[in-house]
Amino acid sequence: MPTVRLTTAQALVRYLLAQHVERDGREQAFFAGVFGIFGHGNVAGLGQALQEHPELPYIPVRNEQAGVHAAAAYARMKDRLGCWVCTSSVGPGATNMITGAALATINRLPVLLLPGDIFARRNVAPVLQQLESPSSQDISVNDCFRPVSRYWDRINRPEQLLYALPEALRVLTSPAECGAVTLALPQDVQAEAHDWPVGFFAKRVWRVPRPRPDVTAVARAARMISQATRPLIVAGGGVTYSGANSQLVELAEATGIPVCVTQAGKGAMPDSHALCLGAVGATGTLAANRIAAKADLVIGVGTRWSDFTTASKTAFQHPHVRFVNLNITDFDAAKHGGLMLVGDARATLEELGFMLDEPVDPSYAAEIARERELWLEIREGLITPTGAKPMPQAELIGAMNAAMEPRDVIINAAGSAPGDLHKLWMTDDPKGYHIEYGYSCMAYEIPAGIGVKLAAPDRTVWVLVGDGTYLMMSGDLATAVQEGLNLNIMLVDNHGFGSIGGLSEGLGSSGFGTRFRLRDGEQLGEDLLPVNYAAHARALGAVVFQPQTLAELQDAMAQAVAFSGPAVVVVECDREARVPGYESWWDVPVAEVSTMPSVQAARAEFEAQVVNERHLHALDPKEPA
Image (cartoon, rainbow, N blue to C red; front, side, top):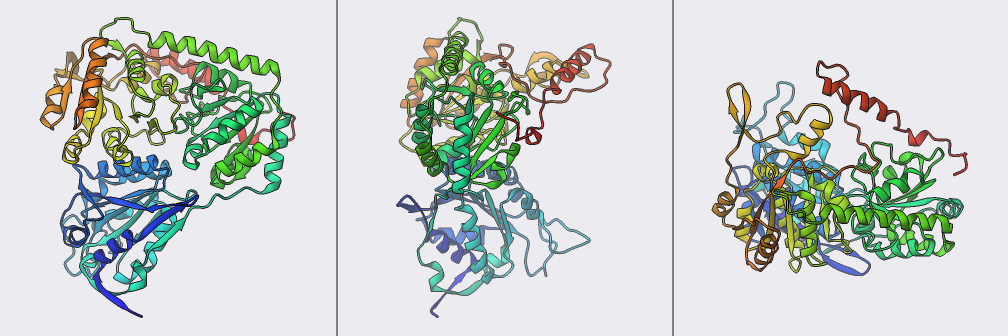
């Protein structure tokens, strides 16, 4: 068998370059490049190997966590058919990636992590940044990646790569299993040479199938839908990942069944469509939540049924509500005791479409239309400019939505903006709304903008970020400057953590510890923390705008898009002007005992609401819908 002598790191890079993915006859290289920061744990191994292969681009980031966020955003924009690698040194560089790994795995997005590790030969231990354990020498900080990775391995000998890499690719290219994959690479093993079979580096195409559910399950689902009087579809991110958007619309139009969307599912059904009720659950619209409350059959397509989607199991109040769950994983399809349709969303919706053509009752159709129209009127009232200074965040969102083109992308992840965007943003593009709400990770937004722009360079990208998130991870503005990316950032200055401040007030705790204030003796005082966001962004290389009026905001957005590099628009918003919830609830327990009357009142409200939570999986399936 012919062999070639390479280091472990050189072999790894060559293998990655040979990997391709194919779905529906479209083939493409799977790995687009590498994000990372070099240190003693990877500079002489992966660093040297990447220098020999410029065809696998290397982008140095300012924080290892940011690199993983950018990789996750890229994978989402590519419908999980493309992947970036993230590398770090051993120690703090590695553990910086753990938050990103958790985000990728929770959101089911493929990211390959290659953290450096301690010496496999051990003779120089304890090395710099080594976590010592008196119970074992076979442990390092990289063991922390195990619970947040879909696949984890430590490569203690070069030839282990022959078996670890195919397993890693199997997981990364699987729509049912994908998430973070971690291969911990001891720094001495990275530089160690081995005679590798030449065939290991031959081109390999990983074919992504469209599995179909059991035919009897599909037939049963069709019967359940036909017999339901108030069916409702909840569309999740799996619709878009599967490319099932047109099939979803066709099924809704053939039956008249309304569609509401999760955060990841926003755009799966065009917001302009008469059967789209918008967001559902704790951050839902009035229309979606009212229809959901009385639905007798809920058809979940590509959703993992998070607590925000179900409003902490209070959204669906029909006494005998039943579920049909279409999902690529049996784990999600089994939730709420639903009928399991385990398969690809596009293929399965096509099959269901052949079996369903009876429209819903005219009275139900009329109710759907009324609720949608009422919600659109409410939305218009929330986004209409009032001239208030500082402006409400809802008005800023409305102005951004109106100014952006149909194929532009809005990015957000944390704070009050995800809830407001979920209700208020209107898009007809499945890729126009990029809100990370599986982990709702502060600091995701700016790195995600980099990942989305790399995945879709022809699209204009707007990152909506709060001041709290900006202060956590703004350094990768410099990465956008480095790469010459036109990344547009709308920075909302509301003087603190507005979202958690509102939640704190709702729980009777008056926003304690959530405002950016200077200390005055033992307490934080009333004087604002004097952070100059504009000066900071300029110092990192961005062009900055500080509009004071709506007209100036519109002009600033136009100039930002026309600029060749990153642009930051700083806008002050009123943290007290909030978009309300609409007949929904989210379970956040309140202190059961307290000397504070406000907390006592909040606890009484909590006890009144928590009784509406339901054990959806325990409802009697024999009862009629």
